[in-house]
Image (cartoon, rainbow, N blue to C red; front, side, top):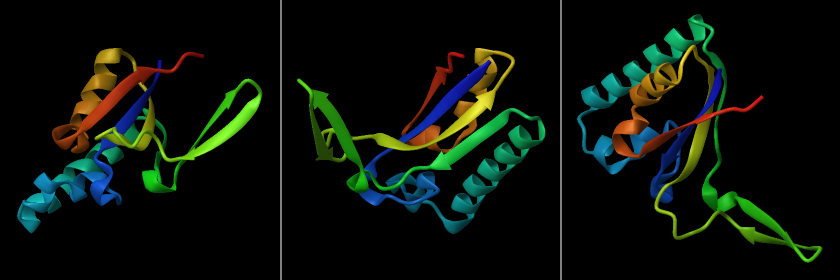
Amino acid sequence: MKYLLMIYSNPASWGHPIFLRTPEALAMSGDKRDELTGEFEALLKEISESGELIDSAPLGDPRSTRTVRVRKGVSAGTDGPFIEAKEQLAGYFVVDCASPERAEEIAGRFPDARFAAVEVRPILS
């Protein structure tokens, strides 16, 4: 089954990889940040070689986002997602896994899960 893994983070210091721009990661030594990057690269290599990784992309800064709503036939665009949100969607991965537990295991191995959130959602097809 396919799953959408959505990476969330605080938009205060946007950039990719987002996990390296969190206050926690910025407080780490260079060696620790390099270790996080190595873990991330190893995970990407593993799920690429296993065929589980289908697609992925980082998303642009939420400040450049537009939200469109149509009410009573009138389209209205507003800047960004809800500004009150402390965490916003930073990027996504589509994986094809044998079980929901495997999808959750992969999500938990993203460094982003340590500092913000990685949502796992089944893709209906």
